[in-house]
Length: 179
Image (cartoon, rainbow, N blue to C red; front, side):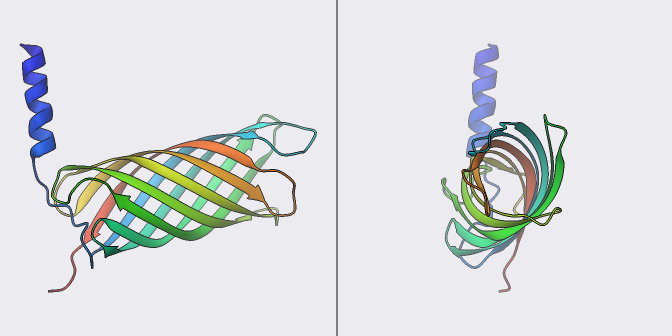
């Protein structure tokens, strides 16, 4: 009996429509809190593990149905097992694709971005990130996203690169276009 009720609830949730605004011409804003772990893979003699917390925002425009491009700034703080810490401000472009058709209460996002970072100590970095995960819409304008990601970071002027896995949770706000 429990399986039937649970299955029915899942089917209802997946078939409900919230008519998310992921069609050409719409804009969206989003914000995420991001947690990540990093394992050093550089040529340096000292290897380290780092934990980062990031807050990001995105401004995007749907240039095609289900396909958005935009700009994403983010601010991060990290500390490692060697007792070091840093603050970084990154900014760069992103592309985002929604896999399922418009009009569902749940959709699946794929997201890729490139950003340039400015560290508090004066160093710079370049980051390439990929995310994927579901977004659940509460109505036509607001959704909550749960993303799993991977990033590779190249510190300018240093050999090698670092990679990290990321977990991001945030909200999307879709803005209606003028009629």
